[in-house]
Image 1 (cartoon, rainbow, N blue to C red):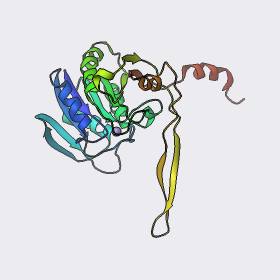
Image 2 (image 1 turned 90 degrees about the horizontal axis):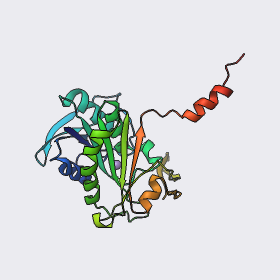
Image 3 (image 1 turned 180 degrees about the vertical axis):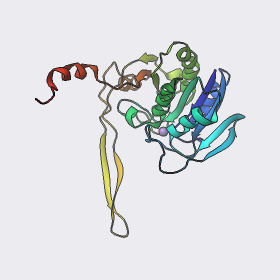
Image 4 (image 1 turned 45 degrees about the vertical axis):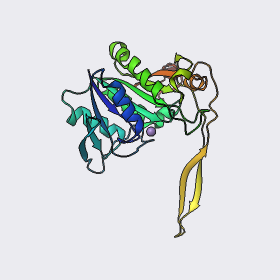
Length: 256
Ligand code: MN
């Protein structure tokens, strides 16, 4: 099994090194990742300039640093850099949770989605700092153990067009309270811009806000992580809302 390890925190992030080393005896691990941090890049592509690629090696593993977005890196891995293409895309380990609506913004999760889109099996791994845990706490051991357990199972059982979004509490492995397969929840961010003025009198805005409220539904990713459990959510490429689709057939009648 050829495993592509990628991320959105950049090729030098400690979480990527931990994941690559954790998976190296499960298959042929290759690293293709953005050359710098691109968190929040979601599924974006670079189309307004060329993308340069720097071949390198990380802990003896073949690696390419891509001067583009996280999904640029995955796409280049599939279309140009790796032949044959990877069977599995493992993204992370991201520093910070990707729960609820984070999934929409996350480059980490987008990499796994792109892997699924390209026909591979895929999973994104994040360590959930900031969800009731200290922002400084970062323990990758539990996430690495989870990846070592989950990647072979997902490779064998995951259907096409689905990726796994895995969030692990930032706790030592012996303090993890279990594993929960659960749905995506909501974080309810209190997003706010800090509006400022630069030395030349121009207005600018810096995205900030305070910690999300994250309503604690017992059966979702936010609740599982808050309870100290690993949250695993299958996410699909098809974002159609089936219930509304059915309802719309009744009310969205073409104009007479
Ligand atoms: Mn990130």
